Length: 165
Image 1 (cartoon, rainbow, N blue to C red):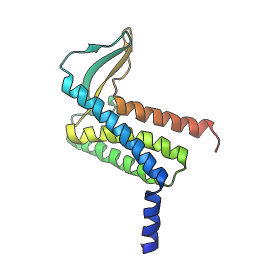
Image 2 (image 1 turned 180 degrees about the vertical axis):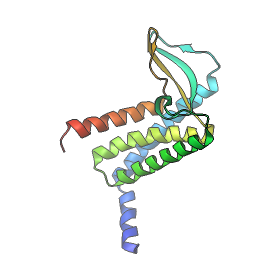
Image 3 (image 1 turned 135 degrees about the vertical axis):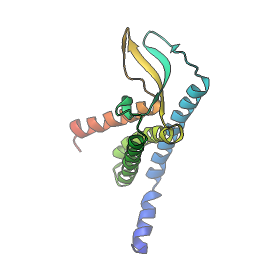
Image 4 (image 1 turned 60 degrees about the vertical axis):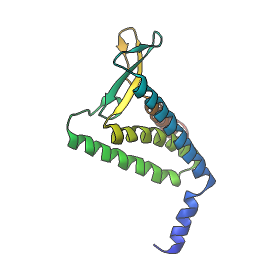
């Protein structure tokens, strides 16, 4: 690489819009950390009833989204964690050259993904605590990071399939 390419890459990284989206990622990460910190600190082994549709119930997810691929194998856990880190790095990389709308979408996903990735590294599992239900039907238990990842993916799908560039 020559000096021109390094200078050009530095300018791309320091664009005002990239700094704005880095702030979005940071805010989402902090919101997720704050919620998880409080849940981990204040929960004992009981379920907290919020209303007829929401309970707060701390569970530790060692799989990926919604508990998929959960296993007791350390090797498999490490492999999944490595794969998640690769996906996050890839999203960060492509977000630098994306248009503003896509940068916003990627920022939402990255912010949530970093929150859950942090938990995988520090706690060896992701604390999920939001339990949505209707009568005896319970949706998967999730957390704030999962909300942002899901919103980002839904916006990405809608944009990809329904909105022409």
